[in-house]
Every structure is written in C-alpha cells, then in structure tokens.
Length: 55
Image (cartoon, rainbow, N blue to C red; front, top):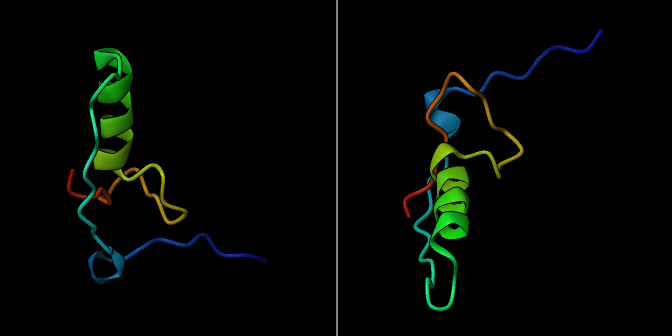
C-alpha cells in the first residue's frame, strides 16, 4: 500500500522568481503569479500548506 506524502514545514524550499511583465496581458500575468505564489507548480504541492515562492 502506498502512503500519501504530506510535506513538513522544513521541506518547503522557497525561491525568488522575477517576472518580466513587458508585453504581457495583465490577467495572464496575474494568473501566472498566483500559481507561483501558491506553489502549484511544485511536485510537492499540498493545499493545506503555504508552499509558494517569492515573486
């Protein structure tokens, strides 16, 4: 039986991400930034934890 992985606060690796907003539609930029801030781009994403990076 496989067990569900639940990350611990010490497992969270935060990075700084700089977004170039030149010639980008504001709504698409906001959606992309929201994904990065929530951490949904990471394979260890968990809804109950703050996994996001700094943008």
